[in-house]
Amino acid sequence: MSGGNNSIVTKLTARIFPVMPDFYGMMVEHCDLVARAMDVFLAFMETGDVAKGEQVRAMEKEGDELKTRQMEILNHAFATPMDREDIYRAIMAIDEILNYAKTTIREMEALDVQPDAHMVEIARLLRDGTHSLRDGYAKLSIKPMDVEVCAAAARKAERNTEKVYRTALSELFRADDHIAALRQEAPGAQAEAFIHIMTVLKRREIYRHLSNSADRLEHAAGILHDIIVQIA
Image (tube, rainbow, N blue to C red; front, top):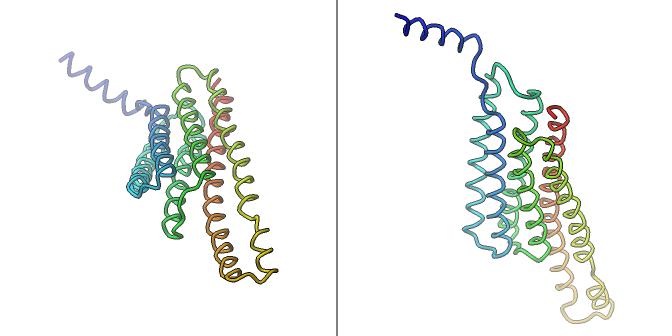
């Protein structure tokens, strides 16, 4: 009888005061998926391996499913360990990093663009930044005062990405040789100039997607910083 009463009390307590979901663990899980996906993304940029691109797309789909489950948990949660809006923003920002990585691969395949040294360098910075982001969220519930170092590292990865992005554009738009050939009316100069223009347009599109992915990384790091301020 006593055991039955305890069971009833336990059920009533759980109904009145539901157990709080592990939102810290959820965000770490999501970050870990993105970090692992960016490992594969870097491998794709280093090799141009189509199978690696397909793996990133599959992981992006997995991320979307994870995001949907997390949003459902958030929507039904009785209480949260931090501002509910910050959890929502964090989940969305983390997911968007991987969305842009997938979009980059899709555009490269559609435009028949092969990776170059700048793309590899940016992919490496994005990989490092997402690992820093994951480390930050992993420390959030145990060592919140140590998290800012990780958030700063993720933001630095975005700044370095922008430097590479500007360098890549500067080199891409150099056309002195083609202009000289056109002025001299060299054989095939017009065709070569046209090919160069098409290459510029295609690669610029890919660089832009990579830059957007870095922007999402910086945004996610900013949200992590906001959470630190709130709970520290």
